[in-house]
Length: 377
Image 1 (cartoon, rainbow, N blue to C red):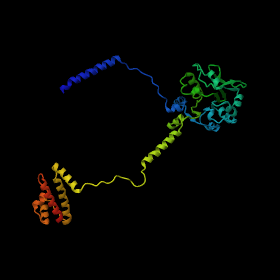
Image 2: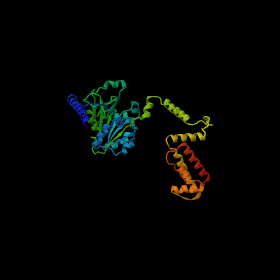
Image 3: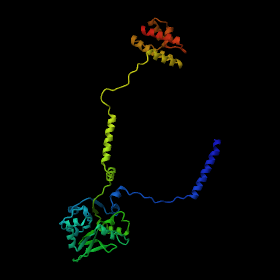
Image 4: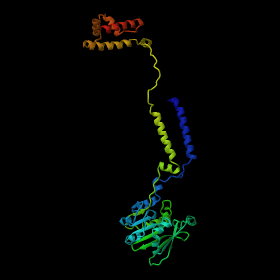
């Protein structure tokens, strides 16, 4: 132990110096790293809004597609509808009017083209409310795409103009350019809200205060009885491995390559039919040569007696089968064999249980004795 004491103390001293040096000259600091959003967040751009409502006691339910009958049978009184996922027909409002006046809050998000809106007769309905819808081309939308922290984030695809022939008060929300992007029309105990695609509700925009306040006023604030909020919108799904692979190229070459690989694999494994062709058989060595080779090997390691031990066990089993006698004592067994085979007991005992190292002459003598016993037994 003493001879290892000096190296041990030197190593411990070096480690202590390194520790003091690292403590005084290095520091640990925080570093911000980008973490990819979860699969649930990538497939649901309204995930933050839904979790916010759930945690504040407003249960959220999402369905991918609906008709007017779905709204009438729903337990929720606050429903956000993306028109691309809703079948709006000319008689839809007349069917929903009573539901709205009795306390239902319907938020209609116009995220479809002008042609589809006109076919659904929605423009005529809005005109009866004193509201006109203006659609913008993709080129014109760029002029209104700048964001401003003093205003919510609205979709630039549509805007509204209000011509109020009725006495009902209409609430409007404008963007930074003075364009009306959201309209709320009260109807007795309920209301209808009109907007474009509700980008202010998406997860990456909800961190702004104006967007959060507007989203809450349309959903959680109107759900006074906490019956929940129903979202009628398409549900996106995240593509798996093969879906992404198909998106990035032609799937056919991969499929053909796999099939060719399978065929070649089976071709290599399945044997060819017919007679098997093998090497020509070579004649083995004579038994005498094998026996001599084994004898030389055993003689080299002074184990010639192992041959005689095998004969001894074999003769003992043969004696039991022939005469039905079981003799455990070796001396008695040798006397019985000598009596049967007309041999001397000493020769039988020496042949079956040799003492000491055997010479070639003695080994051959014992083999002859055993051969005589096997012939006469």
